[in-house]
Length: 74
Image (cartoon, rainbow, N blue to C red; front, side, top):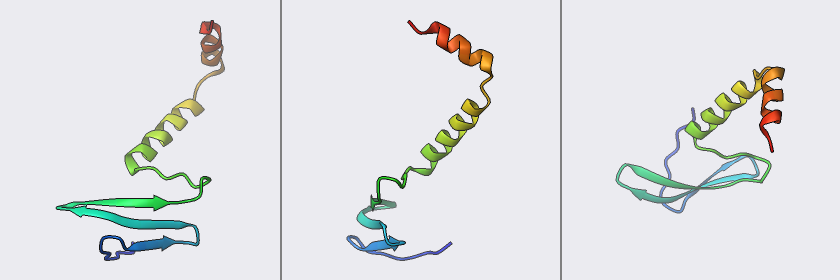
């Protein structure tokens, strides 16, 4: 892990396309601004983990379950 110190309004570059800027610092909280191309998803870690869990669950749906979902549609 790379650990960097930054002040408010200073930025960090990740590759050529991602810019992370320190927007605000209040007590023990830091607000970050993240600029990234649209094809690079940016999520908080807990949201990313939830997406991964849901994708794993969806990957294990049985064909019969899919048919029942289709039958329930109006």
